[in-house]
Length: 172
Image (cartoon, rainbow, N blue to C red):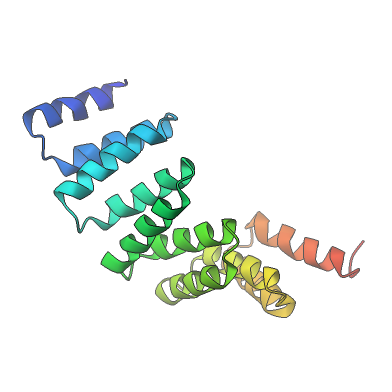
């Protein structure tokens, strides 16, 4: 346990309803390879404050790490239900869906993230990946070009464009 964990633990000993300390300890445990323990702390924080969208978001990430797909999806969905303008929530839910092969749902999440933050290249890049998986090659290329217009150093977009053009025989 590092110094910060000791301080959060001490805070909880004085105030067992300190939601922020549960979250901070959860972040620390997850970062140090203990996502199962982080899940317990995130659930405790949510129990104290059910409308805590960041608690649901963090719980969803931790549950996905421990391979609880159903629980992860529910927690991530709850985070954006509570905070519909939460860009990171829509982006993470989209990447969750994409990683689990639910591409149509991922596409919806990435579109929503873009509606919320039009200047974020990651959402466009992920949208392009979803479009490509759905066979929408031209839309995918346009999404990746948009990614690069926002961030010319976004390496994944270059790789994605290269992969699609190589498979099409447009480059060697």
